Length: 232
Length: 80
Image: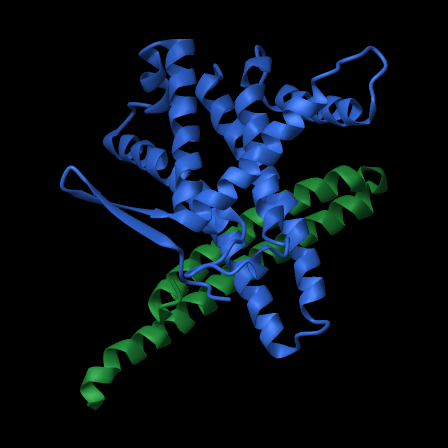
């Protein structure tokens, strides 16, 4: 079990070197497949009296609607696609780290949760940044920048500008570091006493998976709310 | 030989210092969060379920600060 290595595939396109972490890509596809299959199967035969899967998906939607209602004042249903897909994808991806996928040996690296790669979490954080800036521009036009960067002084402007960078940075590093540290914690527990000690740590990691998915979703909603809200 | 090894040794030391100071802040943060939860529950026991959800959120947010330090420490000692 190596904490460091990813299965890196390097390729040169047009004179620039690109490298892909293949293990992250495979596990990300697996998580996407699980989410897509759940979405497809649970909405295939919709009926008035819901079956089990439909009841689960309906309560999930009610959960998202409830959170959006409490945090964004009006016209909040249109944010459900981004918020729900982020939450479900991150949750499935985090929980995959506790599956025994590591018994499939790769040449380098391992098949663990894809969110232990900074590239994936940074991509999601940048998507969130683009989404809330776009939503703010769509709602307020160019006045969004007047609201976002309160031009009261040069210091405040610089602080607000810095916030635009630190928000996706902290989103990305928070999720990545939680999952990465959890895997190292499991490794350390395995090294200390391999038969019983990793179990409570892994249970804690399942809790962390739920909490981190919720935190990512809540912060996304808070950023969208502050970008589209009228107050400031 | 000794001089060549010092920089990586100092990086190991720096990793230890980084995670140590980071853990101080996160420990204080989670402690304050727990204090707030206990205050809220002892004042209004009926909100305990809702307050616990917010407590978990805040604890996760302040725990993340220690994990930023952990990333720096992992960079320094060469884990990543």
